[in-house]
Image (tube, rainbow, N blue to C red):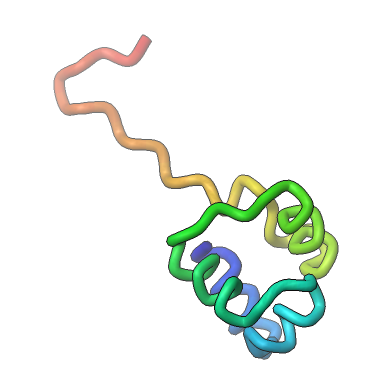
Length: 74
């Protein structure tokens, strides 16, 4: 999500143009950017292809929670 927003800004790509390119609605791209939805495999593949591999499925995963202080990590 953050990576997608960054890519759109870095490439001066408007959300509605990107939506057309990957075959979804502009509101769907907005939801992806906001992190309120999870893209399906087919959409992830289209995003990866449209961004030249710069945005992948891993970029939609939430950041791993840091272990609590004082707790050992196995």
